[in-house]
Length: 130
Image 1 (spheres, rainbow, N blue to C red):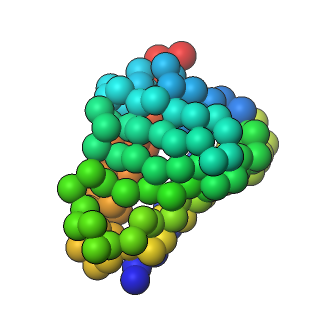
Image 2: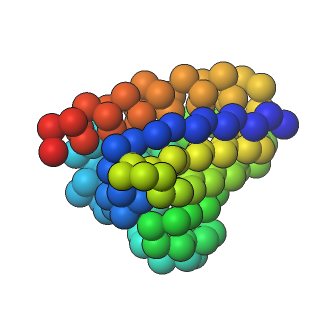
């Protein structure tokens, strides 16, 4: 199994990034695709018009999000992946680390590109407007 790791820096607080992911309305606005996010451990979520789904395993407000995660087109024989998003304040910004693990080789390639195309680039555009 493969792991994808992204480390990014944003010029906003950890709270803003945490809310951008966990708040359904903000998540939808920032990515341009509908998301329904539970904020509780054990709660489920759907993003990108239902293409992505999973459950929250651990939520530490403004610090860490851990979820099971899978695409709706993944073969049923493939296990859910594990997604971890952590936020660390640095100066007036945030160092965000994304670890996405338990991915097949094929899924790792798509996920690696997808995070940039559907999250990080749109997030930066959305935050620049705020």
